[in-house]
Image (cartoon, rainbow, N blue to C red; front, side, top):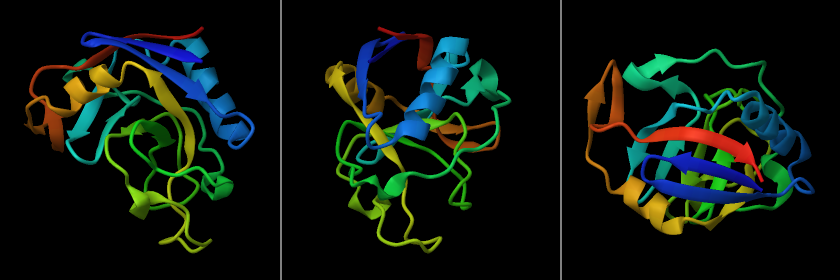
Length: 163
């Protein structure tokens, strides 16, 4: 279990190491190293997801470790309050950034091994603090430093820890 202390409250996440072992270990390595401390939920889209894990305040990008293999074919679905790894168009490009689904996003699920059908790896779910996730998804957003959907007022992960 991982606890994210944000400036809007606490989110507790249960991880599924059985279905996404490499992804969970990757996430835990970032948590225990302090990588996520004082990072932002930098991309917030109501009825879609809230994304974090890659930027400090002022949208200063952090340098992640090497990417991991995408374990999206694990049967877990991108449903409301699940956590998944963010990535680029490259199927196996996930590093540190993650997102919490704030809607049932079936279009993000694994469909097939093609680049368009591979999907995004779910590796856990929010078990406490859903109201915090709901508060984050409602914050006002705008454009900042070349990015869209950035909260106008910082939403900060002050501390991430294994509990």
